[in-house]
Amino acid sequence: MSEQTLQRVDMVRVRDLRRTYGSGPAAVHALRGVSFDVPRGELVALKGRSGSGKTTLLNLIGGLDTPDEGEISVDDTEVVGLGESGLLRLRRDRIGFVFQSFGLIPILSAAENVGVPMRLRKVAAAERDERVALLLGLVGLADHAEQRPGELSGGQQQRVAIARALANRPALLIADEPTGQLDAETGLAVMELLRAVVRSEGVTALVATHDANLLGLADRVLELSDGHITEDRSQAA
Image 1 (cartoon, rainbow, N blue to C red):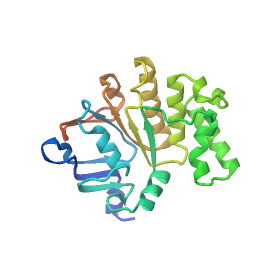
Image 2: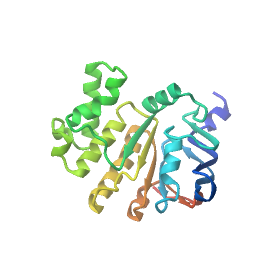
Image 3: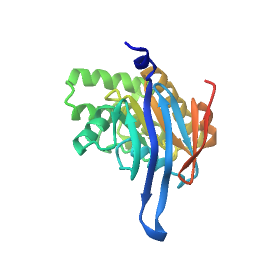
Image 4: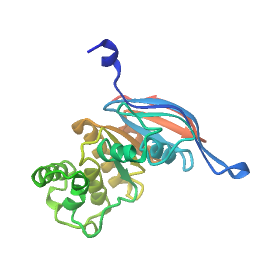
């Protein structure tokens, strides 16, 4: 393996990313030339007020939206220009998503919710069950496998959502305000869980949050304001 290959350890590479919604006087310039890299295995927190561009940036990196200009690479795959089938594979196989709203299926148990992504990939039942049990144990819900979302607290539901996001062993975990519906203590516990998951599963994570109390758990903090990165700060573990 060449020295150049050994040095290439970025999970995410973003170059001159621009995204505008609307046109004319009503145009909203969500991103205005954003560039940064995220090394593999790093937990990066995106900080900024509502409307600063955090969600737009995550949606572009996750292939949920298309930039007006710029380049995005995730796990050595160029995202911009991928066809819909390529984007579907990227999101299914390489990226896990965690949202503020949990997004669990109400009629399914916690275990069944975690298993959904593997069913879509047609993973064998025995392998799927083993992975579900491992992940529920990882997020501290081994004893709640058969409960449905309505029988779980908000923090427990978000833990199920995190386990589901990890089901297909993603290289990148994208979390958009994952603690937004939780109280401060539960939110801190969920953020600590995300940090532990990054370490134990070897994934890279991008987490958008407006909660200053959670930023100290990140390896690095990127602050966005008016579509620009205004601060890029690394932190001691």
